Length: 227
Image 1 (cartoon, helix red, strand yellow):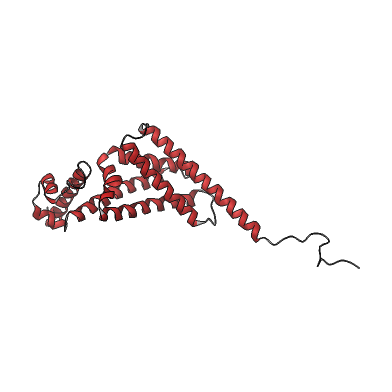
Image 2: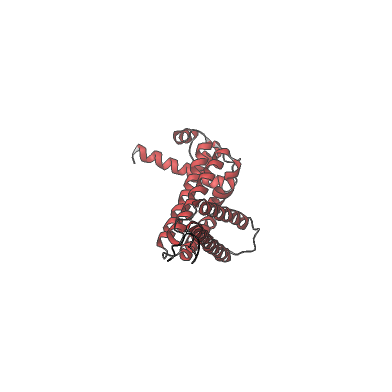
């Protein structure tokens, strides 16, 4: 094995150890020593890949988010090209991705609130998932010439709601089994998307009526009359 390959393998071991610690015992217990002990590497090899524990934690978070995002995007691409089917594919894949590995769920949803660097990355991740939602709206719903600010606000609301529901579900605060949660979240996503499309189209028709020139009434002033 080449030196670069050995270094890459050590980095993966450190990332795996970081995920295990961050996703089980949490941020305060995820230290350089704890990570090295879990990875069975000396601190020398830790600093070969990371400047400090914050850099490792951000890398663990980014990898967990990227894995979930790739799974969701692949599921959307494989689903039939209608909003309801793709909504179910996205919700089902996202929920299963986070519940099949509770460590990933804790890293992505919870631990990011306790560290400034992770909080910034969490905001960027939510923005990326929001953009996926926004693009599906434009691709699959009839919202030509849409008010993009309204679309963005709706997408942000949907992602915020998904995040809070997942946190509550994982904490045992909801009475849902996983399959029921997927069904309910899918229905909420579909209803919200279709309702948003209805509002946008109503607004568009209203704007069109306001822009249309008034019709001249028969016998109104200025109309040419025969003498």
